[in-house]
Structures are given as C-alpha cells and as structure tokens.
Amino acid sequence: MKVFIDGKLYPKEEAKISVWDHGFLYGDGVFEGIRVYNKKIFKLNEHLERLYYSANVIDLNIPYDYQELKGIVKEVVRINLEEENWENAYIRLVVSRGVGDLGLDPRKCSKPTVVIIVDKIQLYPKEYYEKGLKVIISSFRRPSADILSPRIKSLNYLNNILAKIEANYSNCQEAVMLNSQGYITECTADNIFIVKNDVVITPPPYVGILEGITRASVIDICRELNIKVKEDIIDIKDLINADEVFLTGTGAEIIPVSEINGKKVRYCPGDITTKIREYFPKYVSFWSTPVYDEETVK
Image 1 (cartoon, helix red, strand yellow):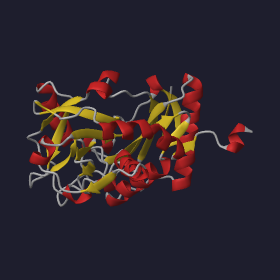
Image 2 (image 1 turned 135 degrees about the vertical axis):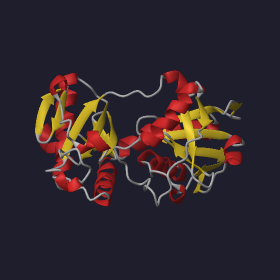
Image 3 (image 1 turned 120 degrees about the vertical axis):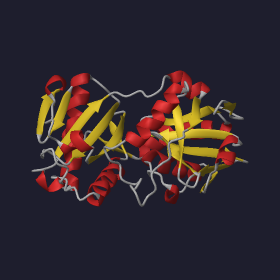
C-alpha cells in the first residue's frame, strides 16, 4: 500500500506527518471519504467540489488546482489497486493547515499538508444490512450553523465522537443527533432518512447537516424510481413512528435501522429501503469516474 503525502508516495509503514501539523494539533483541516467500485471512483467531481468548498470557507488554500488534484487522486488509486490487486477501495483525502508552531494562528503554518490514503473499509458486518442497526437518540446536540457550519467537512469530529461513545455505552451501532431546537439532523457519520406512508423524508440542510454525497444520490434514486421524496423537518415523534428508517454515507452506503431507543422500527428493511439499495449499484456505475482513462489503457 502506498500513501501520498505532499507529492511523494510512501509505504504505509513510512507514511508520517509532523507532530507540529495543525491538523494533528487542532483538527485544522478538511477531508473527504470517497468510494472506488469496480475500478471506478464514485462521484469524484462532487467530492472534490465539496473539499474545495470546505477549504475555501476556512481560508485554506489547497496547493493543487482542481484538475491537478483529480489527476493525482486517480493515479494514487491506480497504483494501489494494481499493487493490492483490488477492484474496490476507499479513499481518504485529507488537507490540513500544515506545519506551524504550538500556537493556533494559521498564519504560522508554512503550507498545507495533502494526504491521500487508499485502503479497504467496512463499517458494519453484512448482517446489519440484512437485520438493521440499533440506534439511540444522543444527548449530545449538533452545534448550530452560526457556531460551526455543518457544511464544512472538517477534521474536528469531537462532537460526533462523543455521541458515538454514548451509542457504544448503549450497545448500539449509531446515534441520532438533534439540533438546539430538538429536530433530527443526522447521525455521527451518516445522514438519516425515514419513510412514512410511502414518502421518503430526510432533514433539510438548514437544520444543521452535512449534505452527504450518498444522501444526494438517494434523493436522485428516489426520483428515478418514482418514489416520493422530500426534505422536511423531522422531530423525535416522526422518527419513532416511521414505517422505515435508513442511514446513508460513503462508508455505510445504505443501511436500515431496526431499533431506536429500544423501540422496534415497523419494517426493517422495508420495501422502499430495499428498492433503493437494490438500485444503488446501477446508479453508482453511471456516476463513477474510471480510474483508467482511454489513454492509460492504450
């Protein structure tokens, strides 16, 4: 396995960054998790657009332009797929503020650090996709957008981690997080959908969510399958009384929920969740970027 760090490739065992890097010291940076299916990168353009958006919001200048970074990602993926003899993989693309001093002033950082890791990922065993996850409603609230914009996919995940720890103590796999008004936002690492009376509903961005790439894909899939879908406020009562509940994310893909705070979800997996999951591979194939261009094949 080879890891890209600032223009060079290193064996996994030799891939290191400085302890003075502000990504390590302060969580000052942004990242993307991206899937590779059948030697194609799923929604690479959308992930890169979100990466550049997040970086721009925190005044972090990525030292490669869009097309250059896109080419680098594809090359690093090619090298690792060939070396490991993989068809599928997971990309972690990280841009930190870079090496500075022990103060948090970003002006003291000489240049951003760019890391690209290509590896395997499996968040949940296969049985959870068949039987569903148990989730809790966390006591930890999502920060409001005027405190920290949820649209920034930053390296600081402490809020999510605290909710995940709470789920672990409850012997559950995920935690649903509310905003300060008590509305459902998302889980620690996934967006959330409910199904009620054959309508798929997911919280709108303004309640405080990261607008997930898989979330947007599921909305597209619903429209392609003529399934009614809408973004709307969801409260605890709506969640507990939903016919179906499922989560979406790059790592988790599409996974049903079986219990919420110990209460069984009516259908798990339900018919609509199953239809969306079964259509997902077809959708992925259409919206993926080949790792090997025609010029590469030749």
